[in-house]
Length: 360
Image (cartoon, rainbow, N blue to C red; front, side, top):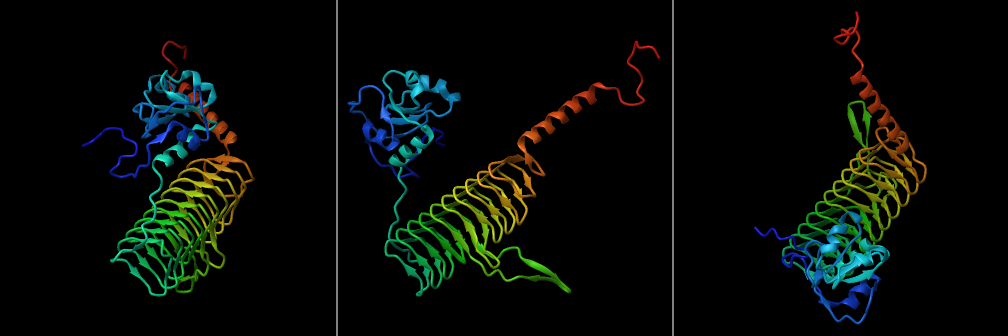
């Protein structure tokens, strides 16, 4: 088995280039330190530890500064204060934010694969569906009646686009994802196995059992949002479930009916958000956190992993624990418990004999 640490293995990733040092610096929105007339060409990206003269690399975490000293990369993206640490012969490209600059450079060498227009012979497309001629419909995909597939959309193998679903331009729906009762903006990405628009968990107790409540809302996903693999987003009961523009949901996230997530939020894996909760813009929710229903999470709030949120949160707060409380209070409680535990180990238990050598 090939265990070489390779970025952009050509078996899996299309590659563009080579690109000149100047073109890489332009993509990074940076400036070349020292003489700018270097004619070197770069063929790809790689980590500092394995990069060769044909690669671009970057340093964003000071923990890896030792790797910078020994790298043989052709060019490295660094902040201005680290230019002096770049080895001789390695071109330094000065950027304000190396991580975002690196993302742009990596996309320069490995741009997203374009849609291949056409419908695979094994796909099932209802005659009443409307497909832009530039869209790609993959093997065994199903497109329902009245669905609208926008320009340059890519529908992966086995994906199901239900009746009436609307996709804006440049959406990507990956393998075996299913969408119903949903309206998507432009450049929305839905990763494999996601389930969007199914009925929410809505029922009321009746005399002979539970009575299901009709779920009559939709799911609205705004421009540039991404929905992780195997995540589930329930449609609303009477109002819509909404995922705001630019928000990113990780894999295995559950969003209940009527939830409204604002713009540019980050929701990490295995988070569960119960119905009718409102998450305002720029909120970050750590992995495995749980939010009860009918809450309002203020703009810019941060929720630590495995938190249990049971009440509204003010804008900008940072909370953790179950039940969730301000991180400072949580850390004080943890420190107190540790101190009590240490003291408990040093104190004799009630009724135990005195230590040997002490008077009775």
